[in-house]
Image (cartoon, rainbow over all chains, first blue to last red; front, side, top):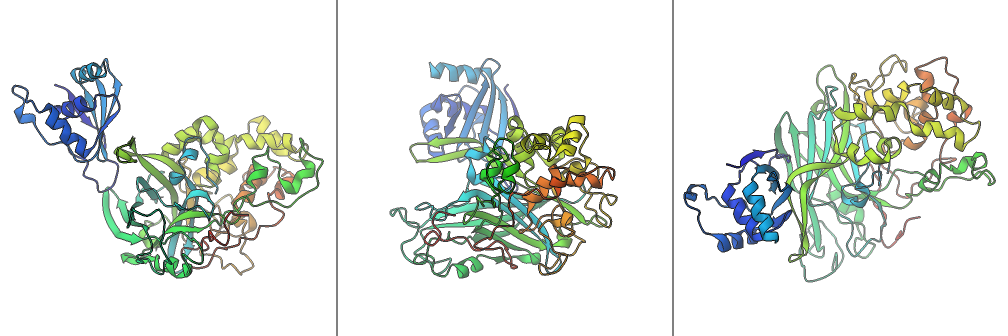
Length: 107
Length: 455
Protein backbone atom coordinates (compact mmCIF):
# COMPACT_ATOMS: atom_id res chain seq x y z
CA UNK A 1 0.00 0.00 0.00
CA UNK A 2 1.21 3.51 -0.65
CA UNK A 3 2.18 5.37 2.48
CA UNK A 4 0.60 8.66 3.33
CA UNK A 5 2.24 11.18 5.56
CA UNK A 6 0.48 14.45 6.08
CA UNK A 7 3.19 16.95 6.87
CA UNK A 8 1.42 19.95 8.33
CA UNK A 9 -1.33 22.51 7.97
CA UNK A 10 0.28 25.84 8.69
CA UNK A 11 -2.57 28.28 8.50
CA UNK A 12 -4.25 28.90 11.83
CA UNK A 13 -7.81 27.69 11.94
CA UNK A 14 -7.65 25.72 8.73
CA UNK A 15 -9.17 22.28 8.40
CA UNK A 16 -6.15 20.61 6.98
CA UNK A 17 -6.57 17.15 8.39
CA UNK A 18 -8.44 15.54 5.49
CA UNK A 19 -6.69 12.59 3.96
CA UNK A 20 -6.68 11.65 0.34
CA UNK A 21 -7.45 8.14 -0.75
CA UNK A 22 -5.13 6.48 -3.21
CA UNK A 23 -8.04 6.02 -5.56
CA UNK A 24 -9.04 9.69 -5.57
CA UNK A 25 -5.46 10.65 -6.31
CA UNK A 26 -5.29 8.20 -9.18
CA UNK A 27 -8.42 9.76 -10.59
CA UNK A 28 -7.01 13.27 -10.41
CA UNK A 29 -3.60 12.32 -11.70
CA UNK A 30 -4.93 10.32 -14.62
CA UNK A 31 -6.90 13.29 -15.88
CA UNK A 32 -4.23 15.91 -15.47
CA UNK A 33 -1.45 13.59 -16.56
CA UNK A 34 1.49 15.75 -15.55
CA UNK A 35 4.16 15.94 -12.91
CA UNK A 36 3.29 19.17 -11.13
CA UNK A 37 -0.37 19.55 -12.02
CA UNK A 38 -3.53 21.10 -10.69
CA UNK A 39 -7.03 19.72 -10.54
CA UNK A 40 -9.59 22.42 -9.92
CA UNK A 41 -12.94 21.67 -8.32
CA UNK A 42 -14.53 21.47 -11.74
CA UNK A 43 -11.62 19.50 -13.10
CA UNK A 44 -11.93 17.00 -10.30
CA UNK A 45 -15.53 16.32 -11.22
CA UNK A 46 -14.52 15.80 -14.82
CA UNK A 47 -11.74 13.52 -13.64
CA UNK A 48 -14.20 11.30 -11.84
CA UNK A 49 -16.52 11.20 -14.84
CA UNK A 50 -13.72 10.16 -17.15
CA UNK A 51 -12.19 7.47 -14.98
CA UNK A 52 -14.98 6.27 -12.78
CA UNK A 53 -14.27 2.61 -13.20
CA UNK A 54 -14.13 1.02 -9.75
CA UNK A 55 -11.21 -1.31 -9.30
CA UNK A 56 -12.02 -4.74 -7.94
CA UNK A 57 -12.18 -4.64 -4.19
CA UNK A 58 -11.53 -0.92 -4.13
CA UNK A 59 -15.04 0.35 -3.50
CA UNK A 60 -14.51 0.95 0.18
CA UNK A 61 -11.75 3.43 -0.62
CA UNK A 62 -13.89 5.71 -2.78
CA UNK A 63 -14.07 9.16 -1.21
CA UNK A 64 -14.83 12.51 -2.74
CA UNK A 65 -11.89 14.70 -3.60
CA UNK A 66 -11.41 17.79 -1.48
CA UNK A 67 -12.78 20.93 -3.04
CA UNK A 68 -10.37 23.42 -4.55
CA UNK A 69 -7.13 22.87 -6.41
CA UNK A 70 -5.03 19.76 -5.88
CA UNK A 71 -1.45 20.00 -7.03
CA UNK A 72 0.95 17.07 -7.39
CA UNK A 73 4.68 17.35 -7.46
CA UNK A 74 6.47 14.19 -8.53
CA UNK A 75 9.77 14.57 -6.72
CA UNK A 76 11.22 11.26 -7.87
CA UNK A 77 9.39 9.11 -10.40
CA UNK A 78 11.60 6.06 -9.82
CA UNK A 79 10.91 5.85 -6.11
CA UNK A 80 7.31 7.02 -6.47
CA UNK A 81 7.92 10.03 -4.24
CA UNK A 82 5.01 12.43 -4.69
CA UNK A 83 3.96 15.55 -2.80
CA UNK A 84 0.25 16.35 -2.93
CA UNK A 85 -0.89 19.85 -2.04
CA UNK A 86 -4.54 20.61 -1.30
CA UNK A 87 -6.30 23.16 0.85
CA UNK A 88 -3.66 24.29 3.31
CA UNK A 89 -2.24 20.80 3.67
CA UNK A 90 0.33 18.52 2.12
CA UNK A 91 0.59 14.75 2.02
CA UNK A 92 3.59 12.72 1.01
CA UNK A 93 3.03 9.58 -1.05
CA UNK A 94 5.28 6.72 -2.00
CA UNK A 95 3.47 5.23 -4.99
CA UNK A 96 5.47 3.77 -7.86
CA UNK A 97 2.28 2.64 -9.57
CA UNK A 98 0.96 6.18 -9.67
CA UNK A 99 4.19 7.67 -10.98
CA UNK A 100 4.30 4.93 -13.60
CA UNK A 101 0.78 5.84 -14.71
CA UNK A 102 1.75 9.50 -14.86
CA UNK A 103 4.79 8.60 -16.93
CA UNK A 104 2.63 6.61 -19.34
CA UNK A 105 0.19 9.52 -19.60
CA UNK A 106 3.04 11.82 -20.49
CA UNK A 107 4.00 9.48 -23.31
CA UNK B 1 12.08 50.58 3.63
CA UNK B 2 14.76 48.98 5.68
CA UNK B 3 14.12 45.60 4.15
CA UNK B 4 12.59 46.33 0.77
CA UNK B 5 13.81 44.27 -2.19
CA UNK B 6 16.45 42.87 0.15
CA UNK B 7 16.65 39.36 -1.28
CA UNK B 8 16.62 38.13 -4.88
CA UNK B 9 13.42 36.08 -4.76
CA UNK B 10 11.32 38.36 -2.58
CA UNK B 11 12.29 41.35 -4.71
CA UNK B 12 10.13 39.78 -7.44
CA UNK B 13 7.16 39.49 -5.11
CA UNK B 14 6.44 42.97 -3.73
CA UNK B 15 3.03 42.05 -2.34
CA UNK B 16 4.77 39.75 0.16
CA UNK B 17 7.86 41.93 0.63
CA UNK B 18 8.07 43.43 4.12
CA UNK B 19 9.67 46.85 4.14
CA UNK B 20 9.69 48.09 7.74
CA UNK B 21 8.67 46.96 11.19
CA UNK B 22 7.99 49.22 14.12
CA UNK B 23 7.30 48.37 17.77
CA UNK B 24 6.95 50.97 20.50
CA UNK B 25 5.14 51.68 23.71
CA UNK B 26 2.12 53.90 23.08
CA UNK B 27 -0.46 55.73 25.12
CA UNK B 28 -2.66 53.89 27.58
CA UNK B 29 -0.11 51.19 28.46
CA UNK B 30 -0.28 49.75 24.98
CA UNK B 31 2.23 48.54 22.44
CA UNK B 32 1.87 49.48 18.78
CA UNK B 33 3.17 47.09 16.15
CA UNK B 34 3.35 48.22 12.52
CA UNK B 35 4.46 46.02 9.62
CA UNK B 36 4.77 47.65 6.21
CA UNK B 37 4.60 45.81 2.91
CA UNK B 38 4.62 46.55 -0.83
CA UNK B 39 7.57 48.94 -1.25
CA UNK B 40 8.13 52.00 -3.42
CA UNK B 41 4.52 52.68 -4.41
CA UNK B 42 4.07 55.49 -6.89
CA UNK B 43 0.90 57.25 -5.75
CA UNK B 44 -0.49 57.40 -9.31
CA UNK B 45 -0.16 53.63 -9.73
CA UNK B 46 -3.55 53.07 -11.37
CA UNK B 47 -5.70 51.78 -12.85
CA UNK B 48 -4.98 48.76 -10.64
CA UNK B 49 -3.95 50.45 -7.45
CA UNK B 50 -1.86 48.70 -4.80
CA UNK B 51 -3.46 46.21 -2.45
CA UNK B 52 -2.50 43.40 -0.08
CA UNK B 53 -2.27 39.89 -1.49
CA UNK B 54 -5.37 37.79 -0.96
CA UNK B 55 -3.11 34.75 -1.26
CA UNK B 56 -0.58 35.92 1.33
CA UNK B 57 -0.67 35.19 5.04
CA UNK B 58 0.73 38.23 6.85
CA UNK B 59 1.77 37.81 10.47
CA UNK B 60 3.29 39.78 13.32
CA UNK B 61 4.93 37.56 15.92
CA UNK B 62 5.84 38.15 19.54
CA UNK B 63 8.34 36.13 21.56
CA UNK B 64 7.87 36.89 25.23
CA UNK B 65 10.16 34.29 26.81
CA UNK B 66 13.39 34.77 24.87
CA UNK B 67 13.57 31.56 22.85
CA UNK B 68 13.27 33.21 19.43
CA UNK B 69 9.98 31.45 18.72
CA UNK B 70 6.54 32.95 18.51
CA UNK B 71 4.42 32.84 21.63
CA UNK B 72 1.77 35.10 20.13
CA UNK B 73 1.09 35.57 16.40
CA UNK B 74 -1.35 38.00 14.88
CA UNK B 75 -2.49 36.83 11.45
CA UNK B 76 -4.02 38.96 8.68
CA UNK B 77 -5.79 37.52 5.62
CA UNK B 78 -7.24 39.79 2.94
CA UNK B 79 -10.21 39.35 0.62
CA UNK B 80 -10.84 41.41 -2.48
CA UNK B 81 -14.31 41.98 -3.90
CA UNK B 82 -14.94 43.39 -7.36
CA UNK B 83 -18.40 44.85 -7.32
CA UNK B 84 -18.70 45.20 -11.09
CA UNK B 85 -16.21 43.16 -13.12
CA UNK B 86 -17.69 44.63 -16.28
CA UNK B 87 -15.87 47.94 -15.92
CA UNK B 88 -12.16 48.65 -15.79
CA UNK B 89 -12.21 51.41 -13.22
CA UNK B 90 -11.16 51.24 -9.56
CA UNK B 91 -14.02 53.64 -8.88
CA UNK B 92 -16.85 55.11 -10.94
CA UNK B 93 -17.30 58.29 -8.93
CA UNK B 94 -16.25 59.86 -5.65
CA UNK B 95 -15.69 57.38 -2.82
CA UNK B 96 -17.35 59.11 0.09
CA UNK B 97 -17.47 56.19 2.52
CA UNK B 98 -16.08 52.69 2.95
CA UNK B 99 -19.41 51.29 1.71
CA UNK B 100 -19.76 53.66 -1.24
CA UNK B 101 -21.05 51.85 -4.35
CA UNK B 102 -18.74 53.99 -6.49
CA UNK B 103 -15.81 51.99 -5.11
CA UNK B 104 -15.46 49.00 -7.40
CA UNK B 105 -12.54 47.08 -5.93
CA UNK B 106 -12.88 46.68 -2.19
CA UNK B 107 -10.55 44.89 0.19
CA UNK B 108 -11.45 43.56 3.63
CA UNK B 109 -9.52 41.42 6.08
CA UNK B 110 -9.74 39.03 9.00
CA UNK B 111 -7.50 39.21 12.06
CA UNK B 112 -6.63 36.19 14.18
CA UNK B 113 -4.42 35.66 17.18
CA UNK B 114 -2.62 32.39 17.80
CA UNK B 115 -1.15 31.60 21.19
CA UNK B 116 0.01 28.22 22.47
CA UNK B 117 -1.57 26.46 19.51
CA UNK B 118 -4.97 28.05 19.95
CA UNK B 119 -6.25 30.41 17.26
CA UNK B 120 -9.11 32.81 17.75
CA UNK B 121 -10.62 35.40 15.48
CA UNK B 122 -10.34 39.00 16.63
CA UNK B 123 -12.19 40.56 13.71
CA UNK B 124 -13.78 39.56 10.42
CA UNK B 125 -14.50 41.46 7.22
CA UNK B 126 -12.81 44.57 8.53
CA UNK B 127 -12.60 47.30 5.91
CA UNK B 128 -9.41 48.63 4.37
CA UNK B 129 -9.52 52.19 3.06
CA UNK B 130 -9.14 52.73 -0.68
CA UNK B 131 -5.87 54.00 -2.05
CA UNK B 132 -5.56 57.77 -2.20
CA UNK B 133 -6.51 58.32 -5.83
CA UNK B 134 -7.01 62.07 -6.00
CA UNK B 135 -9.35 64.91 -5.06
CA UNK B 136 -12.13 63.77 -7.41
CA UNK B 137 -12.11 60.10 -6.43
CA UNK B 138 -11.18 60.32 -2.76
CA UNK B 139 -12.11 63.89 -1.79
CA UNK B 140 -12.39 63.16 1.95
CA UNK B 141 -9.45 60.80 2.31
CA UNK B 142 -8.72 61.55 5.95
CA UNK B 143 -12.25 60.51 6.84
CA UNK B 144 -11.97 57.27 4.86
CA UNK B 145 -8.70 56.40 6.57
CA UNK B 146 -10.10 57.23 9.98
CA UNK B 147 -13.16 55.05 9.37
CA UNK B 148 -10.83 52.15 8.63
CA UNK B 149 -9.39 52.20 12.16
CA UNK B 150 -11.14 49.27 13.81
CA UNK B 151 -11.58 48.93 17.56
CA UNK B 152 -11.85 45.30 18.60
CA UNK B 153 -12.51 43.59 21.88
CA UNK B 154 -9.85 43.43 24.58
CA UNK B 155 -8.56 46.91 23.89
CA UNK B 156 -7.14 45.96 20.49
CA UNK B 157 -7.11 48.45 17.62
CA UNK B 158 -6.19 47.56 14.03
CA UNK B 159 -5.69 49.27 10.70
CA UNK B 160 -4.63 47.87 7.35
CA UNK B 161 -4.21 49.96 4.25
CA UNK B 162 -2.14 52.46 2.32
CA UNK B 163 -0.06 55.06 4.19
CA UNK B 164 2.77 57.46 3.46
CA UNK B 165 6.30 56.09 3.68
CA UNK B 166 8.01 57.36 6.83
CA UNK B 167 11.38 55.68 6.36
CA UNK B 168 13.99 57.87 4.73
CA UNK B 169 17.20 56.76 3.11
CA UNK B 170 19.53 57.86 0.35
CA UNK B 171 19.35 54.55 -1.48
CA UNK B 172 21.00 55.97 -4.57
CA UNK B 173 24.16 56.82 -2.70
CA UNK B 174 24.35 53.84 -0.36
CA UNK B 175 24.10 51.29 -3.13
CA UNK B 176 26.46 53.24 -5.40
CA UNK B 177 29.44 51.80 -3.56
CA UNK B 178 28.59 53.58 -0.33
CA UNK B 179 29.06 57.01 -1.83
CA UNK B 180 27.39 58.95 0.99
CA UNK B 181 26.74 62.42 -0.36
CA UNK B 182 27.63 64.35 2.84
CA UNK B 183 31.10 62.74 2.67
CA UNK B 184 31.52 62.77 -1.09
CA UNK B 185 34.86 64.54 -0.90
CA UNK B 186 36.31 61.73 1.20
CA UNK B 187 35.11 58.82 -0.94
CA UNK B 188 37.98 56.97 -2.58
CA UNK B 189 36.60 56.30 -6.10
CA UNK B 190 35.00 59.75 -6.31
CA UNK B 191 36.53 62.24 -3.95
CA UNK B 192 36.42 65.11 -6.41
CA UNK B 193 32.93 66.37 -5.78
CA UNK B 194 31.77 68.64 -3.03
CA UNK B 195 29.86 67.48 -0.01
CA UNK B 196 26.17 67.30 -0.77
CA UNK B 197 22.99 66.82 1.23
CA UNK B 198 21.36 63.43 0.91
CA UNK B 199 18.52 62.64 -1.49
CA UNK B 200 15.56 60.80 0.03
CA UNK B 201 14.81 57.94 -2.37
CA UNK B 202 11.48 57.24 -0.68
CA UNK B 203 10.21 60.79 -0.89
CA UNK B 204 6.45 61.02 -1.57
CA UNK B 205 6.04 57.27 -1.96
CA UNK B 206 3.47 55.06 -0.27
CA UNK B 207 3.47 51.67 1.43
CA UNK B 208 0.78 49.37 2.79
CA UNK B 209 0.68 49.20 6.60
CA UNK B 210 -0.67 46.61 8.95
CA UNK B 211 -0.92 48.23 12.37
CA UNK B 212 -2.16 46.71 15.59
CA UNK B 213 -2.24 48.24 19.05
CA UNK B 214 -2.70 45.97 22.05
CA UNK B 215 -2.39 46.31 25.83
CA UNK B 216 1.12 45.60 27.11
CA UNK B 217 -0.41 43.01 29.42
CA UNK B 218 -1.61 41.01 26.42
CA UNK B 219 1.95 40.55 25.14
CA UNK B 220 4.18 40.12 28.18
CA UNK B 221 4.54 37.48 30.84
CA UNK B 222 5.35 38.09 34.49
CA UNK B 223 8.95 39.11 35.07
CA UNK B 224 9.72 39.52 31.35
CA UNK B 225 8.91 43.07 30.24
CA UNK B 226 10.97 42.74 27.04
CA UNK B 227 9.34 41.26 23.97
CA UNK B 228 10.86 40.25 20.64
CA UNK B 229 8.90 41.19 17.53
CA UNK B 230 9.14 40.20 13.88
CA UNK B 231 6.85 40.03 10.88
CA UNK B 232 6.52 37.37 8.21
CA UNK B 233 4.68 36.85 4.95
CA UNK B 234 3.86 33.34 3.81
CA UNK B 235 2.55 31.82 0.60
CA UNK B 236 1.09 28.43 -0.10
CA UNK B 237 3.62 25.98 -1.49
CA UNK B 238 1.90 25.36 -4.85
CA UNK B 239 0.86 28.16 -7.18
CA UNK B 240 -0.24 27.50 -10.76
CA UNK B 241 -1.64 29.85 -13.35
CA UNK B 242 -5.10 28.74 -14.46
CA UNK B 243 -5.29 30.19 -17.95
CA UNK B 244 -8.95 29.25 -18.33
CA UNK B 245 -9.85 31.42 -15.37
CA UNK B 246 -7.11 34.00 -15.85
CA UNK B 247 -5.88 33.70 -12.30
CA UNK B 248 -3.51 31.84 -10.06
CA UNK B 249 -4.72 28.90 -8.01
CA UNK B 250 -2.91 27.91 -4.84
CA UNK B 251 -2.75 24.83 -2.64
CA UNK B 252 -0.78 23.39 0.23
CA UNK B 253 0.57 24.63 3.51
CA UNK B 254 1.80 28.17 3.93
CA UNK B 255 5.57 28.60 3.86
CA UNK B 256 7.42 31.71 4.90
CA UNK B 257 8.86 33.85 2.10
CA UNK B 258 9.60 37.11 3.92
CA UNK B 259 10.84 38.03 7.39
CA UNK B 260 11.78 41.25 9.12
CA UNK B 261 12.89 42.01 12.66
CA UNK B 262 15.64 44.59 13.05
CA UNK B 263 16.01 47.02 10.17
CA UNK B 264 18.65 46.36 7.51
CA UNK B 265 19.85 43.00 8.87
CA UNK B 266 18.93 40.95 5.81
CA UNK B 267 19.44 43.90 3.48
CA UNK B 268 22.98 44.80 4.57
CA UNK B 269 24.46 41.96 6.62
CA UNK B 270 23.30 38.66 5.13
CA UNK B 271 25.16 37.61 1.95
CA UNK B 272 23.34 37.34 -1.37
CA UNK B 273 23.38 33.57 -1.49
CA UNK B 274 21.57 33.19 1.85
CA UNK B 275 19.13 36.09 1.86
CA UNK B 276 16.08 34.14 0.70
CA UNK B 277 16.98 31.25 3.01
CA UNK B 278 17.15 33.75 5.87
CA UNK B 279 13.69 34.97 4.88
CA UNK B 280 12.29 31.44 5.16
CA UNK B 281 13.50 30.69 8.69
CA UNK B 282 12.40 31.68 12.20
CA UNK B 283 14.59 33.91 14.40
CA UNK B 284 15.35 30.89 16.58
CA UNK B 285 17.55 29.59 13.74
CA UNK B 286 19.66 32.74 13.45
CA UNK B 287 22.71 31.22 15.11
CA UNK B 288 23.65 29.95 11.66
CA UNK B 289 23.82 33.56 10.43
CA UNK B 290 25.49 35.07 13.51
CA UNK B 291 28.89 35.32 11.84
CA UNK B 292 27.51 37.86 9.38
CA UNK B 293 26.46 40.04 12.29
CA UNK B 294 29.63 39.68 14.35
CA UNK B 295 31.93 39.91 11.32
CA UNK B 296 30.05 42.37 9.11
CA UNK B 297 31.51 42.72 5.63
CA UNK B 298 30.57 46.40 5.43
CA UNK B 299 32.70 47.29 8.45
CA UNK B 300 35.72 45.94 6.64
CA UNK B 301 34.95 47.97 3.54
CA UNK B 302 34.52 51.38 5.11
CA UNK B 303 38.20 52.22 5.31
CA UNK B 304 38.67 51.22 1.69
CA UNK B 305 35.79 53.42 0.59
CA UNK B 306 36.89 56.29 2.84
CA UNK B 307 40.67 55.93 3.20
CA UNK B 308 42.06 56.67 6.65
CA UNK B 309 38.64 57.62 7.99
CA UNK B 310 37.82 54.25 9.56
CA UNK B 311 41.20 52.77 10.40
CA UNK B 312 40.21 51.66 13.91
CA UNK B 313 37.15 49.67 12.90
CA UNK B 314 39.19 48.37 9.99
CA UNK B 315 41.72 47.00 12.46
CA UNK B 316 38.91 45.24 14.34
CA UNK B 317 37.71 43.68 11.10
CA UNK B 318 41.19 42.62 9.98
CA UNK B 319 41.88 41.06 13.39
CA UNK B 320 38.63 39.13 13.18
CA UNK B 321 37.47 40.63 16.47
CA UNK B 322 33.87 39.56 17.05
CA UNK B 323 31.58 42.54 17.13
CA UNK B 324 29.84 41.64 20.35
CA UNK B 325 28.23 45.08 20.35
CA UNK B 326 26.34 44.24 17.14
CA UNK B 327 25.47 40.81 18.49
CA UNK B 328 23.92 42.45 21.55
CA UNK B 329 22.08 45.12 19.58
CA UNK B 330 20.66 42.77 16.95
CA UNK B 331 20.65 39.21 18.27
CA UNK B 332 20.28 39.13 22.07
CA UNK B 333 19.36 42.59 23.24
CA UNK B 334 21.58 44.67 25.47
CA UNK B 335 22.31 43.29 28.92
CA UNK B 336 22.26 45.79 31.76
CA UNK B 337 26.04 46.02 31.81
CA UNK B 338 26.38 47.76 28.42
CA UNK B 339 24.44 51.00 28.80
CA UNK B 340 23.89 52.07 32.39
CA UNK B 341 20.28 51.77 33.46
CA UNK B 342 19.10 50.15 30.24
CA UNK B 343 18.43 46.60 29.14
CA UNK B 344 16.38 44.84 26.51
CA UNK B 345 18.21 41.53 26.88
CA UNK B 346 16.07 38.49 26.19
CA UNK B 347 18.62 35.78 26.90
CA UNK B 348 21.43 33.97 25.12
CA UNK B 349 19.43 32.72 22.12
CA UNK B 350 20.75 34.48 19.02
CA UNK B 351 17.65 35.71 17.21
CA UNK B 352 17.03 38.71 15.02
CA UNK B 353 14.03 40.33 16.65
CA UNK B 354 13.07 43.91 17.36
CA UNK B 355 13.36 43.94 21.15
CA UNK B 356 11.14 46.26 23.12
CA UNK B 357 11.43 46.73 26.85
CA UNK B 358 7.82 47.62 27.57
CA UNK B 359 8.65 48.93 31.05
CA UNK B 360 10.39 51.97 29.53
CA UNK B 361 7.93 54.80 29.09
CA UNK B 362 7.71 56.58 25.72
CA UNK B 363 9.68 59.80 25.42
CA UNK B 364 7.45 62.74 24.45
CA UNK B 365 8.53 64.02 21.04
CA UNK B 366 8.96 67.57 22.34
CA UNK B 367 11.10 66.67 25.33
CA UNK B 368 14.83 67.33 25.61
CA UNK B 369 15.67 63.63 25.81
CA UNK B 370 13.81 62.71 22.64
CA UNK B 371 16.26 61.74 19.91
CA UNK B 372 15.71 60.19 16.51
CA UNK B 373 19.04 58.46 17.15
CA UNK B 374 17.40 56.48 19.95
CA UNK B 375 19.68 54.95 22.53
CA UNK B 376 22.93 56.29 21.05
CA UNK B 377 21.28 59.72 21.18
CA UNK B 378 20.49 59.26 24.87
CA UNK B 379 16.84 58.31 24.35
CA UNK B 380 16.10 54.82 25.74
CA UNK B 381 12.61 54.73 24.22
CA UNK B 382 14.00 54.57 20.68
CA UNK B 383 15.85 52.04 18.55
CA UNK B 384 17.25 49.54 19.42
CA UNK B 385 14.64 49.52 22.16
CA UNK B 386 11.95 48.63 19.67
CA UNK B 387 11.67 51.11 16.85
CA UNK B 388 9.59 54.25 16.50
CA UNK B 389 8.34 55.56 13.18
CA UNK B 390 10.67 58.57 13.30
CA UNK B 391 13.85 56.78 14.38
CA UNK B 392 16.76 57.36 11.98
CA UNK B 393 17.78 53.73 11.85
CA UNK B 394 20.05 54.15 8.83
CA UNK B 395 22.30 56.60 10.65
CA UNK B 396 22.18 54.56 13.87
CA UNK B 397 23.21 51.36 12.10
CA UNK B 398 25.82 53.08 9.92
CA UNK B 399 27.45 54.39 13.07
CA UNK B 400 27.19 51.03 14.80
CA UNK B 401 28.79 49.27 11.82
CA UNK B 402 31.48 51.96 11.78
CA UNK B 403 32.40 50.96 15.32
CA UNK B 404 30.72 53.67 17.36
CA UNK B 405 28.94 51.15 19.59
CA UNK B 406 31.98 48.92 20.14
CA UNK B 407 33.16 51.31 22.87
CA UNK B 408 30.23 50.13 24.99
CA UNK B 409 31.59 46.57 25.18
CA UNK B 410 35.31 47.48 25.15
CA UNK B 411 36.01 50.70 26.98
CA UNK B 412 39.60 50.71 25.68
CA UNK B 413 38.45 50.94 22.08
CA UNK B 414 39.26 54.25 20.39
CA UNK B 415 36.31 55.13 18.18
CA UNK B 416 37.11 56.55 14.75
CA UNK B 417 36.02 60.20 14.78
CA UNK B 418 34.14 59.58 11.52
CA UNK B 419 32.03 56.87 13.22
CA UNK B 420 30.43 59.55 15.35
CA UNK B 421 29.23 61.59 12.39
CA UNK B 422 28.66 59.18 9.51
CA UNK B 423 25.17 59.54 8.00
CA UNK B 424 23.45 59.61 4.63
CA UNK B 425 21.85 63.03 5.22
CA UNK B 426 23.30 66.29 6.51
CA UNK B 427 19.99 66.66 8.34
CA UNK B 428 16.90 64.41 8.36
CA UNK B 429 14.84 65.10 5.23
CA UNK B 430 11.38 66.62 5.47
CA UNK B 431 8.58 64.09 5.08
CA UNK B 432 5.73 65.60 3.05
CA UNK B 433 3.05 63.56 4.77
CA UNK B 434 4.74 63.32 8.13
CA UNK B 435 4.10 60.69 10.77
CA UNK B 436 1.41 61.64 13.26
CA UNK B 437 0.90 61.15 16.98
CA UNK B 438 -2.29 59.17 16.38
CA UNK B 439 -2.77 55.52 15.49
CA UNK B 440 -1.75 54.23 12.94
CA UNK B 441 1.00 56.88 13.19
CA UNK B 442 2.18 56.92 9.57
CA UNK B 443 0.97 59.91 7.57
CA UNK B 444 -1.92 59.79 5.12
CA UNK B 445 -0.84 58.34 1.77
CA UNK B 446 0.26 60.65 -0.99
CA UNK B 447 -2.42 61.38 -3.60
CA UNK B 448 -2.14 59.98 -7.09
CA UNK B 449 -3.30 63.30 -8.58
CA UNK B 450 -1.42 65.68 -6.32
CA UNK B 451 1.87 63.79 -5.87
CA UNK B 452 1.77 61.40 -8.82
CA UNK B 453 5.36 60.29 -9.16
CA UNK B 454 7.18 60.82 -5.89
CA UNK B 455 10.06 63.24 -5.49
